[in-house]
Image 1 (cartoon, rainbow, N blue to C red):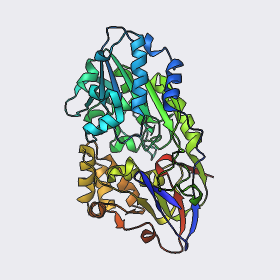
Image 2: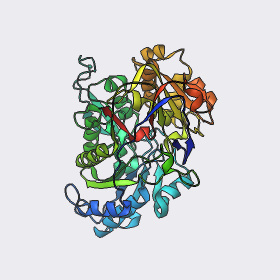
Image 3: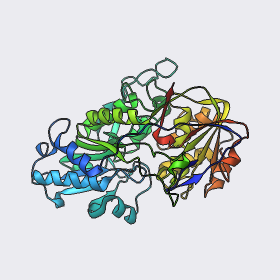
Image 4: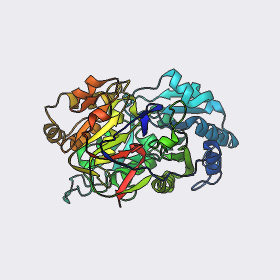
Amino acid sequence: MRIPYGDTTIDVSLPECDVTVAEPPGGEPVDPREAAEEAIADPHGPPLRERVEADDEVAIVVTDVTRATPDDALVDMLVSELAEAGIDRDQISIVVGLGLHRPMTDAELREGLGEYADLAENHDAEAVREVGTVDGSGGEGSDGESDGTDGEEVQIQLNPTVADADAVVSTGMVEPHQYAGFSGGAKTAAIGAGGESLIGYTHGPAMLAREGVRLGRAEGNPFRETLDRAGDLIGLDFCLNVTHGPSGGLASDANETSEGERSESSGVLGASAGDHRAVVRDLADTARDSLSVEVEGSYDAVVAGVGAPKDANLYQATRAATYVALGDYNPLSKGGRIVLSARLPEGAGEGTGEQRFYEWLSEAENADALYDEMRRGYEAGAQRAFVVARVLRNYDVYVTNSESSAVVEDCLMHARESVEDAIEPGSDVLVVPDALDTLLVAG
């Protein structure tokens, strides 16, 4: 069988194990440009051309390299629609919604935005300014007790280009997200073009402990609700988002390609445009139908596929482990292990958040001590270390085939040369070829 590895795949053979493969049903791919055009023509709420004036300065916030969003096509459709309202190219700015991730290179901007790369600037989370506050939406923690944040006002900071714009538009990818349920919608602008205040608050231990903050849940999710309020405050006028299917067919030898390249059967499954809340609801339904797999029983090991762009660094790749162990259905036996194959050419990662993640994990004595310490608070961006610690308290995580084995070992995880080296013979193994785009649910 094959699992993702960077832009290609690797072969895995576990003849001495009892192997079950969890592959979601997927859906019928659509052309991103055509889907975007149809979504813009039939949006949730008024069309974009009716939401702007001809003399407006417009900021378009786009995703960064950690999201496989077809931003070139989406931006092209948005620019065309803005032209119908009398807005020229020189009235448009593009801000890359980095949050606390590293800046995109010039080459990445050209690849991601095509002819619009010259309009783009990388967001700088240290150069933001306050634009207001939103209700922090206090609630109960997972233990049923009040989390102590009722009535708390959260400061909203924003990229100056976005704050100064007369109209704000965003692209986005609605895909499973550990905390927001699904990404996209207001998240691209409020987090991607925001400051540490909202990032730190929404990703802090009190928020992450709230009931409803979980993978695959958009409704009744305090994290998502806070983002949506922030989107309203910053004046997010219009969203154009897409969703995609699973990587498709990677576990089956019958789907091998001659060069070992990853299957292209996933692709965009749909697009939605207009009011940010409705866009997320719309595409979350599409994603959930495409990505859900019913699972029964428990397993000694779960092989969780990652692939590009998320396996560029350990910060992103560990999402596969937390998605498996902290999702709707946990398939692991007590003391089980999660095995990830990831290239990790950037090591732990190069952005502020990634470096904070590395510092917390690499300086910790063990997962229990790290978890207890981080429950008292941490800087924005370090939240991935917190959720990884939650997983490591109960399960071992093995990272194989990486270019940064020393970084893996520094971070309380285990590096191995191959998947086979990380799994004990005779194990019951669940293979999730596309772990970041698979929602495991109880069968």
